[in-house]
Structure formats: structure tokens, C-alpha cells
Length: 249
Image 1 (cartoon, rainbow, N blue to C red):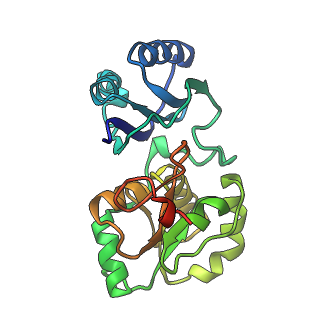
Image 2: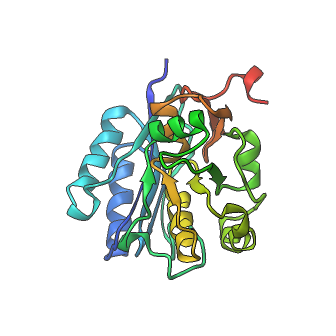
């Protein structure tokens, strides 16, 4: 029985009092018997948590009482065991490291495309304006190997901080095309889309909510394999469940 609720959520927002937040969030999670990781920085929050449903949702409701964090929108999945070994809260320079300080999603997002709209574009082969659609995977090579959108472009990178140089070197390949950047839950493709617009690529969108939201709203259409996740489940199928041994290869 899948009794453990797993959530992932992030929000780019200007945060202050990081040390106080770190202490408060850690103590609250421990009190609720939650495990996972929360990353805090001046640019926002990124979290992966698991526990009993009422405890997980209670903690998120507590965070959302802060007006800055009210827009947090977790993505949910279930497991029959606790996929994290401990509870960690860290303060980092960036909640996802890109090493480009000018890229500040907390001051303004790139346009996004909902999962169902992307599925329609992929069925048609073009977007609503008739432009060819390219799915651009912003994840690391080992994640891409487990699963990706059919026909997606990736740069075979080992760290997200390598993405800016790679897309700069390949930007000529995207001329007159619509680019949809995607990742696991949205955090990397959000920064990636802003960066691509900054270097002059006009028709760029981020996949709203990443692969996990796509699985939730669309399922497996146009996607091959599973989605890597950073916990002991290792991956999730389009049904948002860990792969069976026969399907995990």
C-alpha cells in the first residue's frame, strides 16, 4: 500500500532571514517526522519531502501562510516506503546552480506552456503559429538516459552549470523554431528559458511543472522511459510510481 506522500516544490522569490528560516523549517519537519531536503537561498526555496500525508500537507500549509511562499504548488507522488534517510535544510547561493547571477527568475518568469498544450504541439509537430517545436532537455546526462521526450534535444552535460555555454554554442540550431525547455519539476528549465531569451532566442517556453506535472496531466504520450528523481526511488514512471524491476532498465 502506497502510504507515504512524496512532494517536490520550488519557488523563485526574494527570501530573507535565511538562518531563522532554516532553523524553523528543520524543527517543524522533525516534529512532523518528515524526511527529505530543503534548499534555501536569497533567490527562493526548493524542497523534496516525504512522510504521512497530513504531516507533509500540514508543513506546506505552514509555509504558505508566509505571503512570499503562498504560491508554492507541490507535485505529489506516493510510495510504500520512506525514500529519504534523513531531514536536511541547507542555505545555498542558488537553489539550482547555474553560475549566472543575472538570471533572476524571482524578478520575472519566462513564458510557460502547460503540459496539455505541449502534448498537442507534439501531436501536430508544430505550435499554434505553425513553427517547428523542439523539446530541449536541461537535465544531466544520467537523467536523460532513464527517459526523455521522444526526439528531444540534449547537450549530454554532467552539471546544469554547463548548460549556458552549450546552448550558446548551439543557438543557430534553434533559429525560427519554438523551444520548450524541460526538466524534472520545472526549476532548471525556468532558469534555462530565461537565459535563452537573454541571448536572443525569441520563441522560448518552459514546460510548466516539468516532467512530473506532464505525467500527472498527460501521462506517457510523447515520452519514452521514466523520470529520474533524487531519492531512493531513483525514478518514476508516467503513472508516478517507481518502475518495476522489468521496466527499470
